[in-house]
Length: 106
Image (cartoon, rainbow, N blue to C red):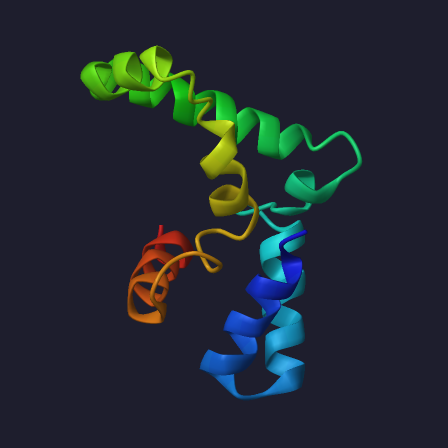
């Protein structure tokens, strides 16, 4: 569903299978990342992240939220792939690297 994109990003950047494996283990299981909850059967982590993102859009981008509502656009239509791949799937690689730098650093 999305882990393959994350693993591919690690393999591309690190160019080392073992190091990539341990990075994958780390982001899946350790705080503050704990991406494992995004991929569990109930997708609880994905649902939580989607809820937070929807609330943030409504609070900080109310005009966009109203536009989505008026066009019957549910943000899950585009947010779920972004969230489950931590943006590795749909964006240029240089942007993905910047996002991941911030994600891993913070």
